[in-house]
Length: 369
Image 1 (cartoon, one colour):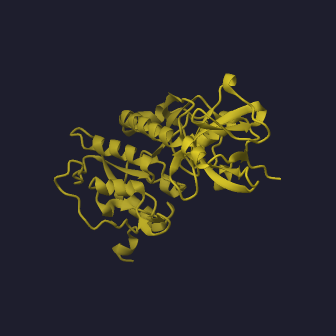
Image 2 (image 1 turned 60 degrees about the vertical axis):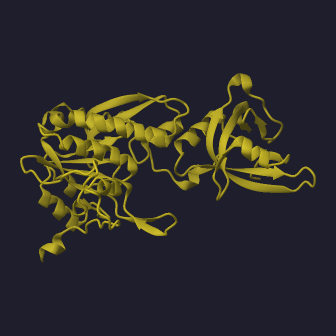
Image 3 (image 1 turned 180 degrees about the horizontal axis):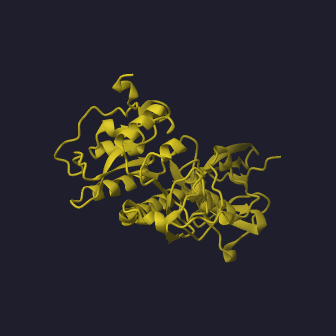
């Protein structure tokens, strides 16, 4: 078998233009074998924060490591399937001048060609941050110092694919980010270090996710010396599996809001599902002149729970408008203020603009008979 057939199918640059050499963001990636090779794995935009931290640290004169390669999800069709685009991390790496032939995009991390290419790099350490693929034992056995994951929760809490979203959905007041060695069991490896963070009741998932990975990148850079000298493995604390909670992947079917639930539950769900998949609700528009009823599907963007002193329970299923908000009656005699909505195919609008567009028509909750 020739050498080219052993090489991983590598990432192709979808932008034919070469970044200008005058750009301050372009880095020199000449190999220095006195430095320990590190491989970074990630995919969404939040991973770029960690990559930046690693590239900046590796560029220091006294750095003991270099970023030898990047592993990310394959290019995919985006913008309603019109164009095949690289993952956000891959595009960010290219924009920084990282060589395209060192950006690997296996469909699965267990692919033989990929694993052969990874072994050829002889990485001392692998770092993962929202990579999105399960790592098999054959992968985990390759880096000499192991694989370290940045996980946006205080492990062993919220192990799984959606830790930030599930934490917000549960309405927790505190979360954090953990740095842990990767083992075959899901997010169950020994924890090297963690950083706690308080959450306010208006924070949405995209903002919290970005903040946690920003804090996680700082934590990683601080702990890298101990990881490379081996002391991190000695001090890492095993997780207490009896305290573990799970954060399963979110499905689009979960996005519907049921106003039989209390307002705080719905508000937390709106925050948690912000970005993707979002939260949806059905309402009925009633024309009082002819009694015609028209059902509308709304995407609920921003909400607030009415304080106890301001709650005004509406008659039946009537939705009212007060002080810039649509007020939905909810379970437990609570009310939810909806501040921003989005109609299908339209831009996000504030509640006042939507209410004015009703031109005096009545708005009611939709009740599924």
